[in-house]
Image 1 (cartoon, rainbow, N blue to C red):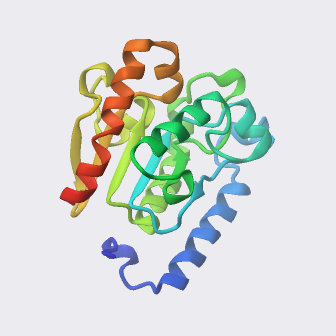
Image 2 (cartoon, rainbow, N blue to C red):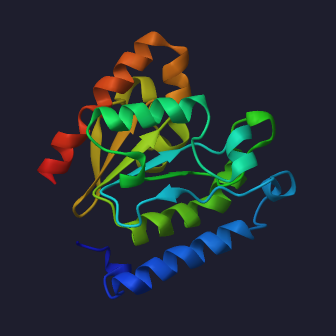
Length: 198
């Protein structure tokens, strides 16, 4: 599997150890105010050699309680959508732009996003997926700055050699809006062809 230049020199064992060290760093992080109210950090979970990484916004109440990403209603919906393209949750990696729950599920603030971006960038570098799926506007802004999710969902962009980003609605938004739910399902169906193309 091709690796990004920074991690190309690592053996698979060293790469996995680097991922585990990064998760340990995330668990003890105090870079922003979110550390003061969290129950658990949520580094992410899944395959450490995934073709696809899904990037959400941030943990909700259930995720904060369990330390796992997308475990509530929107997580079950996402799992079903992943299965609809012939994959399982354990075949992909799922994480978020912020690793601690914003109080009352408010939007992450700019300084909180800035504190967590290096963690996400390092995860992408070490996991080395072919496709990064952005779920919602906050992860979308990382790779599609200045865009609106309602306008660009389903669109792709090359973000590094051999790696594409696919913009999608957040699963919670798709559950609230039937039109967005249909768009979410249609956008998810683009993944097998995108992987084949890459």
